[in-house]
Image (tube, rainbow, N blue to C red; front, side, top):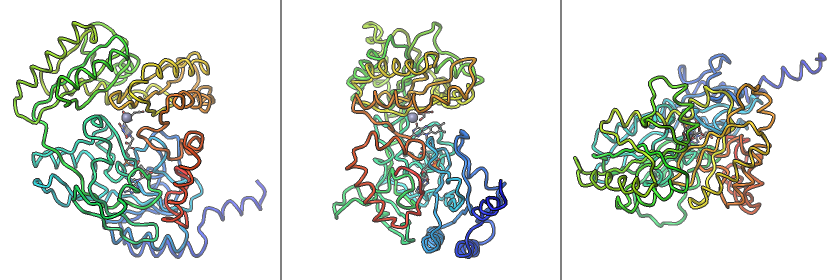
Length: 487
Ligand code: FAD
Ligand code: MLT
Ligand code: ZN
């Protein structure tokens, strides 16, 4: 490197004077213990959990209330400093980490983690955005209520992140995505103003429903600071079965039967392929196959009742499974007799992501197609992948009841990760072209972030992208909110 280059690169990592002043002001406003400035300590906040993305930042801040978020945002807007909102940093698409330019601050919501109130009559809960999802579920349970959003990252993801990504998870079939579980929001806008829409109303037609803009916006339009969440009656009788099915079409027929026979109270309908099961059994200690023989596909099915000891629902559930066995929609099934057994079934599903990570590199596709198109999509997309990498391993599983599959591809056995990674774009392209053929989505639940930003224009109409751009520019004219994500 020439001495001129060395000077330039050194300068680019130290902020300009106006930015330095702004950073000092932010530190002063927040006070000790509410920011990190040393690079080593910042690393966990700058690194995506799979290690695919690492960034740089001027500061990581931990505001404790909405006023602090607003003050920090105002200073950043004036000084042109970017803000990357961060929850649990479990994003699957590099959404919560800054770019390597080093001119952003990361705004962690982790100190805004209070459950503010629960109204059992209104069936609502008001929370700060940094509450861990599992803590919200437990707080609802303690009041004999239910917050149904559930995903494998629930022990570390935060509700602000869930809302900013419009998270899906395993209960969408019955309760909808995160978007459908929100009644009110408080948001700090990119200029620092506080938009207070924190109502617990189920009906409100006073103009545009502004909260919808921020749900699923991945931190590009503002910082979600509080939310009013919808609650439901607590489930009291949970019937869970782990079913082997002959093929995916049979799985979908089983879904239909289960919906009809249960009075449409199917809570979960998750597809697990044998390859996924094998990875989980290999990498996750204490897991075991509940069935004696090996099958190609499985479904984890749950039907829930809010009545205690609901024997009628149990009987219907067992009869439905019996009929499905007779008509060969199911080849074999295990019904959970205890909560412990139910948790064992769930371990096979919830560890799909972790076991893939332990197995090596995988290229993820988080797609959705109409439920009726899943079987043909599955075959067509698999053939398309084999056309790119004949030794690829398909790791397909997920929310079949929502038409959403995690159509992930693991690196071939005994071949270097770098050879597989070199095919990343081609494999993505192969799968996404098939998604397009079926009028599907290239991101059913994880979002666009950095990972799919370049792909988006190929799969979203230019008019839709224009409208998104107009909204972004109107709310964030300086482009400081989570730059480099989505558009
Ligand atoms: P982060 O990763 O911190 O942030 C995600 C995005 O939201 C970023 O763009 C960030 O800037 C923005 N953001 C965060 N907080 C705020 C805020 N307060 N205001 C504005 N913007 C904000 N996702 C699913 O949908 N369904 C699943 O089933 C699922 N399963 C997963 C399983 C595992 C094991 C893992 C690791 C991840 C899984 N995910 C799943 C992905 C991830 O957990 C979700 O996207 C989750 O909603 C992110 O929450 P978070 O708090 O970690 O957000
Ligand atoms: C899940 O549903 O477990 C995750 O969203 C899937 C993934 O790892 O792709
Ligand atoms: Zn998922």
